[in-house]
Length: 377
Image (cartoon, rainbow, N blue to C red; front, top):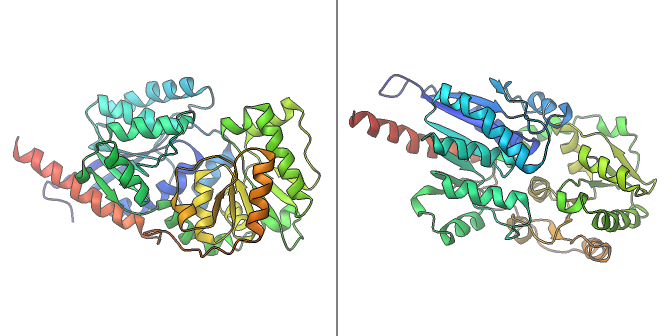
């Protein structure tokens, strides 16, 4: 049954990079079942490699976007500017009641900026996360997006605390849980049927999984070399498998940094294949925020190759440990992880039901707002 005005409320959901899709999929699923909303997916094309975006649509049962902006690569300024330039005419044409932006990539901030200037409500999913490191481009994206969002949906308690500290009104903040975990729980059984282990020739009982893509790690040759030296020593104990981000491969090749023959690199993987490797691994070494969350729920030890994390719940409750970016700090974290006896828990509301909670908040916020606007006309 439609709402009292008999017209679906138009919504835009914006995604641009691989981490966005796992959060968008359960959100699109629950919104598509509500006749009170008309939901349109826009893909900015910030990640342009098929395995890094296109494959995720089939793996996550996510419908194809109505708009594909084809932004592609470039510096942070270039990429942000391209999203701004290309999404503005789309939003003017559609004139939605709200835009839902997720995470902390350049597309997130760019979409929020354009919508705000057009008078379109902004809903930030995964709001409030802070690393307190402004050298991270993602941190700037988080701060800017949160400061102009009308509704802020948080994944963990730290997000709520950070937003209140920054002066955001309590009534705009809602603790809904983690949409990425909704996707994990929905697709884990199917992922466990993947034959990626056979295709990669993994025949070891124990292996580690690596991801590395953040500019602070891969754009600094000295820092990248220290990380790779640590990985090579760890690989002497157990083989490491590394689905390699394109920009990381370019940096390693350009710097001519040798890899141990026990570090097996490959092209980026689809969601289901990667999820199986995570669930089957002995340890994951990563600089990805989403992987910190997934390993926490899967119960897999995780060494985060950074000096900070915007997801402290993964340390407080889960399996995550900050390893730093220097060879010795990484190896020390590796040694500590082998004797780790910490009690592990799944963080609050990471229960696979974030989608319905988001839906309930959106109905209250947007349908109530539309009704109020009609009464004033």
